[in-house]
Length: 354
Ligand code: DGL
Image 1 (cartoon, helix red, strand yellow):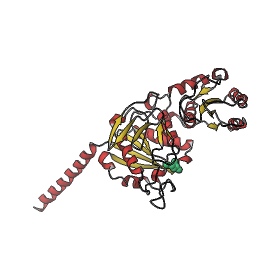
Image 2 (tube, rainbow, N blue to C red):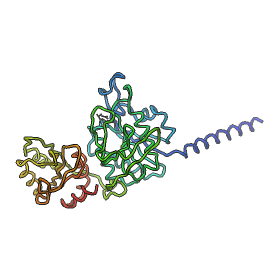
Image 3 (cartoon, rainbow, N blue to C red):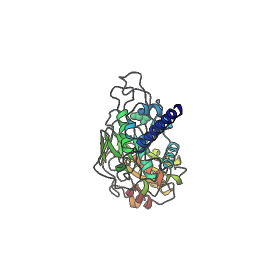
Image 4 (tube, rainbow, N blue to C red):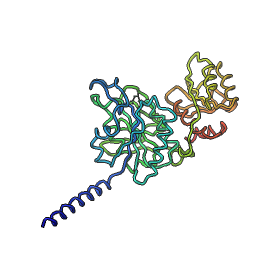
């Protein structure tokens, strides 16, 4: 009698285990890679929404702080870094992208979420857009308030990011950023406000929205990305130095000369207006180009795009224009493009296509 009961108990346990696995099998498998930032931040009081310490809360606590995640996905976390994102370096970009590339090759991974500080989130998002060969959703997410603050935005942002990363309809749309109910393209999005929850926007508009655990799409990217990129993180082990010079009235030519002397393979000119170059700076930039360093005209103006051969004879000077990419995005693209030797004509092609 006793052995019969024992066998029945074992059978019940086994059935529960299988049921548990079966329930989990109907949910996508999402890996959360944590790098730090405000979403992992902590303030002294609930009133501290802007003054706090970033990069304090570990990934397992982040996941536990949003129990609803288990309703939408099988989630597991990895702590890749624990830093404020202004401290990202090229080495961090390479390490993170290589980890993402390895994970998306696994059959038991359906999507990736990367929790990240908002300061350089747009740079990481574009770097992954250019270098990770996959059509699986890769979704970056941050927050503008620490989890300890009243009306903290990180909890819903993280939930939304996991929903998007687990959504089959998010496949093939490039690297995405899920913040403030919005889904933006990793290429287009930029941080436009430094202390509000609607910090991020794309001048060409978001790709979609995520509301109450459901994604709604309104457009798709037209520029090359991820699986359709000619750049592959698995073949990149070093990134060239590319620096940005912010232009303004009275800017000295020496700013550009010291960037070139510092070993930059390209200089991104964050120009006034349509990427304009002061007449006293033109000779220095032409000399820099003739020395073999690429010159890319971008603009400090947040919207629009830089027109080639407008006020500056780019064809004659052999310069490149950044199209609609802001200086920090232009730097990421130039850095990836110059992992291989190429002339300015080919670099300009890359700026049109990506
Ligand atoms: N130190 C900033 C960063 O890590 C905090 C901003 C944020 O994450 O929202 O990017």
